[in-house]
Image 1 (cartoon, rainbow, N blue to C red):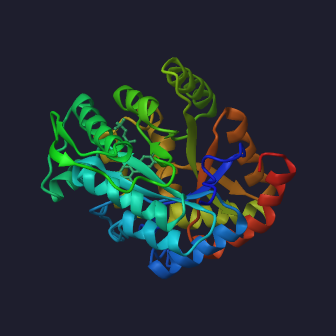
Image 2 (image 1 turned 180 degrees about the horizontal axis):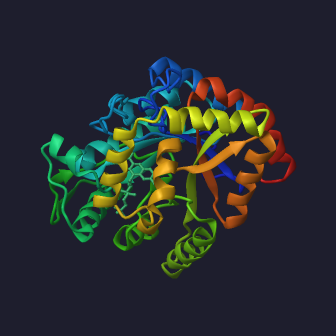
Amino acid sequence: MTKNPMISGDHFRLGTFSTNCSSGMTPTKIAERWDNSWDNNLTLAQMLDDAGIDFMLPIARWIGYGGETDFHGGVLETMTWAAGLLASTKNIAVFATIHTAANHPAVVAKQIATIDQIGHGRAGLNIVAGWNKPEYEALGLSLPDDHETRYAYAQEWFDLIRKLWASDTHFDWDGKYFKAKKIKGNPAPVRGSVPIINAAGSPQGRDFATDNANFLFTPAIDLERSKAEILELKAQAQAKGRKVDVLTFSHVICRPTREEAEAFLKHTAIDNTDTAAVDNLVNLQFAHAHSFPHDLLAQIKHLFAMGHGGFPLVGTPDDVAEGILKLHKTGFAGTTLSFVDYVAEFPYFRDTVLPKLEAAGIR
Ligand SMILES: Cc1cc2nc3c(=O)[nH]c(=O)nc-3n(C[C@H](O)[C@H](O)[C@H](O)COP(=O)(O)O)c2cc1C
């Protein structure tokens, strides 16, 4: 069994997000936007692994957001993506992102157990209870309007997975959403379970996360708000006898000078932004999900154009390191990083920012 960097050590966790999706986290029209091919994912994963990055988190997406680039119109499926990456790396944790309604829990229980063996204990699971209505319709599924039903379904889905992992005898399941006869899960994941992520924003979702997840993802739009939010979430988990760490996601534009970083930001996210895709993305978020504070719309639109709503880490290596230290100080346990072109831009971050984080004692 290998260590899973998500559950060993107490350093500030760093990962990547959305490398399996076309254009990554940036709905831009520029030619250098991210090409999410398997070969690029593999090259990046091995680079991240060698650099000691903790995890890779994919987005599960079934239709794109339209616009000129059809942002996220091309997506590598996350379970098979994770299997391939776990087989090709040594230390990094790799998550699969799974929609509860589109994937039967008995199948997912076995898939996760399988990829956890492939990675010798480095797999993880990000549970999505659903929010993107047109995507559900594309799959012929109906997204329940109320969050109570979405998360009640997710709870039974995960309860069945956990029982499949824990039980060494056949059992029957007679639930509200699932029925099973003489079922048994074998094998279980290497450690009996895997690190669980949930990224809910609603009160019902946060109940689910503090009941079931090890990590809750939340956007970092206003760090003062985040500070209070993190304390509240941790207290909520603690009251249930659980520990939940809060993670966020950030977008990096790191250049030798601030001028260069700002110029690239303007080039990608202002002069060449895929406006229709950004509008569609933000409208859908606001219609069906509770993740982003609705009173900060203008700021949020710009952040979506830059990095899908991620915390901006834009500037020199010192600026970027300082931004990450701020997230740490706010109480986040880690962040994902995205780049317009991950393979081209990660090495500069690795060589200039990682040593600063080590010197500051958070890695
Ligand atoms: C870091 C992060 C990762 C997410 N990954 C996905 C994903 O891959 N697919 C998806 O449909 N939704 C994804 N979501 C959406 C959440 O799972 C959740 O549905 C959304 O934040 C709405 O929260 P709510 O259900 O509590 O309203 C993600 C959200 C965040 C912040």
